[in-house]
Image 1 (cartoon, rainbow, N blue to C red):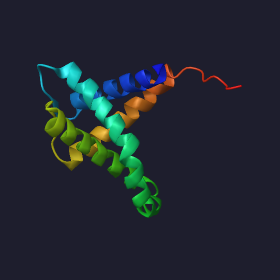
Image 2 (cartoon, one colour; image 1 turned 30 degrees about the vertical axis):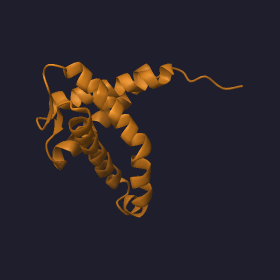
Image 3 (cartoon, rainbow, N blue to C red; image 1 turned 90 degrees about the vertical axis):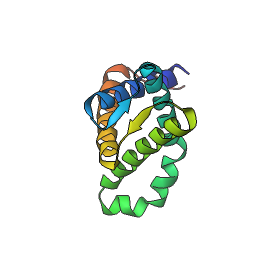
Image 4 (cartoon, helix red, strand yellow; image 1 turned 60 degrees about the horizontal axis):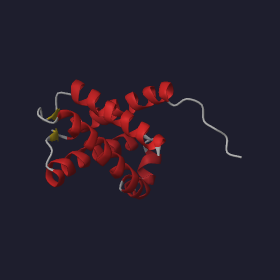
Amino acid sequence: MPRFLIRWGITAGAVAVAAWIVPGIAVAEPHRVWAVVLVALVLGLVNAFIRPVISALSCGLIVLTLGLFALIINGLMLWLASWITVNWIGLDFRVDGFWNALLGALIISVVSVIVSIFVGGKKRKKK
């Protein structure tokens, strides 16, 4: 369970960095921290359940583009997470347009990898 919380925190931080850098990604002011935390949770759920199906369906396109189509899938998942948080949860986390979603997904991926390197620590071997 703590590993899940660490990943959730890393994703929330990465979403906050993306919202800070990309002008087309906005978080509502009154509940900014909670919005980022819930977007990170929704993004994690979208990536856990919907992304594998989309990746499997577009496997040929991912291979054909040498993996670059996976970045487009990441952008679409961020855009979907934004739509879910706005329309189903009622929080104001807006991603305006596909290109902002693509840039935001790229920033979230890079920040998550960099922070995971420093926070990850040593992995224990199972006996």
